[in-house]
Image (cartoon, rainbow over the protein chains, first blue to last red):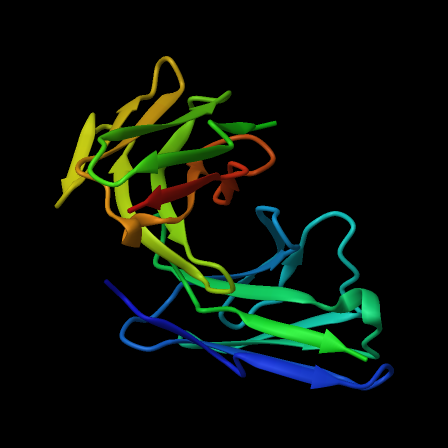
Length: 114
Length: 115
């Protein structure tokens, strides 16, 4: 199947700083990329949907000024957590898809804010 | 609003058993249904995708069925192995409603296969 990568796989940052997470589709061009957040022992919660060259669409309750999403190309999307706080600590997973076909997920990024 | 339910929430079986995981969804307006596997601390691995027009898909020891009209899917795992231990998630790709074009996930079934 197709491969989606994320970088970094884990990151520790201090409260008040910003951190950027990259998501790349390695062997296909994704029309749409998605960002999810997962709390321990829970399922995935969709944060936002992004299409290349256009603004991301955020789910209700997700602060767009805090979670900045940039979809610069058909193979790269980035999530920047601005002014991070301990409550932002979580597992962030991206995924990519072509049209309404199979959706492929990255390996996730573990963010810890101290 | 689409809701996806997975039963059971957890399952523990001895190695070698055949087992069935269940998934139900409330809105039949879907493009497809995917079954995923998630190991602790890892991302999701796609196991099987069933298009809305299909009834089943098979890959190795895995077989997934879909009855769209009744809103049900099952994942059948034959001759289970300890390496099958993981959380299994089903998700539907919505073809209508407020979640159009997005996946709705179930809460998952935690499977433990003991030697």
